[in-house]
Amino acid sequence: MNSCIIDIETEDLDPKEGRIICIGTKDAENGKVTVFFDEDEEKMLKDFLGYFHNRNFKEIIGYNILFDIRFIFAKCLRYGLSANGFFSSSITDLMTIMKSVRRIYCYNKPGTLNEWTEFVFGAGKYPLTESISDLFDKGKISQIIEYNKRDVEITYQLWERVQKVFGHD
Image (cartoon, rainbow, N blue to C red):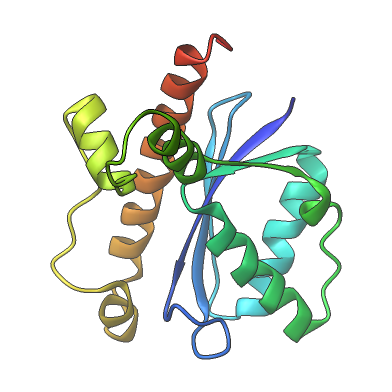
């Protein structure tokens, strides 16, 4: 299945209150990481949705990916954008998998993406000295993009490891 790892960075947790700053993707087939950023949020979304459609992705993978999908959906509604098959793709949420394993085998918290990747790989997320919102307000877009790229990469690595554990490698 043609899969795409996705992670967004936002100005706020509520799509009505904040914008999508950038959308990071990793093509699971060729390994290429692409980050979409534009001062014009609508243009950025159009570019991302065009890329998603042109690559013919059938699966969206992420950690707490429903947050990202909800945000993208709200922005598509706001701008009246066609999502070109994005919302009909199958979804693999690594956080949901971790919660399911917890529910079946123990009562530990599912953990954050950072906690899991530190445990599994010995390295976590790209460290930030300020919040994403503060970095955006200060125009430090390159830091946000680097943070987003790292999130996409570690999400991909965790997905690969989960696939191996489930015998799907």
